Amino acid sequence: MSPVGQRKSHESAVAHVSGTAIYTDDQREPAGMLSLWPVIAPHARARITHLDTDPALTVEGCVTVLTAADIPGENNTGVIRHDEVLLPTDEVSYHGQVVAWAVGETEAAAREAAAKILVEYEPLPAIKTIKAAIAAESFHNDLQVIRRGEPETTLPQAEHRFAGEVEIGGQDHFYLETQTSWVIPDGEGNLQIYASTQHPTETQAIVAHVLGLPSNRVVCTCLRMGGAFGGKESQANPFAAAAALASYKTGRPARVRLRRHHDMLITGKRHGFLGQYEVSFTSAGQITAMKATLVADGGWSLDLSPPVLMRAMLHGG
Image 1 (cartoon, rainbow, N blue to C red):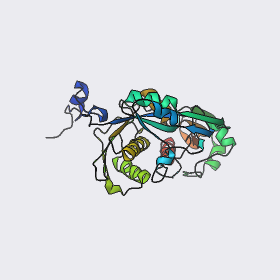
Image 2: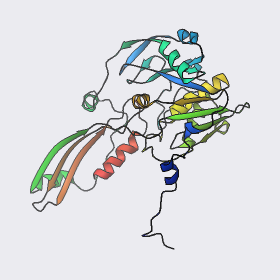
Image 3: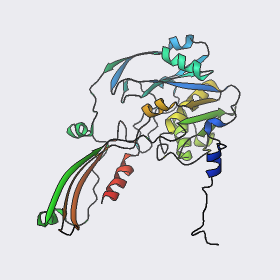
Image 4: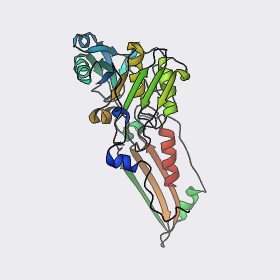
């Protein structure tokens, strides 16, 4: 029978509406599960002049603290370009960047331990707007161009011409389940990851890369796919890597479960954009030519900015 014209529910609708759907942190917790809590930078850009984790270890229930020195593989989670350190060593690049993770027997212990970690900074000049980045020629990659026809010839010959500029800020993806990852070691050098990710294979590869393991030592499972709106296509990877690093160091299960305010601070956003355009049109309202420049705010690292920008250009044309 043809489904055209028939009412059909989403395959997950009943579970979602009834509250029976199992998300990453709804699973039965394994014995000895550790929790992580982030230490975040309060500067848009700054040099780390001092980092002292010893006070955290005096907190009852604090098991360890994770810093860049604990990473056995490469300290990087960039997907297109390796320009996104998991934990900084000398400089922070955005407000809210994670400098260290406290690991505790409970989330409360990890939170208390994180508050005792001492970090001193030397603030540095930061680029905070798209126009400031353009003025400083601070670009992640080369100019991308889409062209059809000869707008330079058509625009001056038009009945009417109009030029303008539009600037919009970024958007938080605001998925229902915040960034969450569980990592469970099997005692034989393998790791089982349960990650709230849109790209389990990439999460597997990034975690293996950070730990210096072959990918077949890491298994990544996503319990519920959908509803992340692009916010977990690549940005789930650092949190899975942090939990995996804690598990690798301690030999115990570990989890990252971000509170909403941390999620919105630490993760990237849908890009802010600056658009400058010139368009020509007839008296009947027919567009005859357009020339537009789109600049996306890619933040501190490249991430997935090139395909996002290319899609905006294609849709704009």
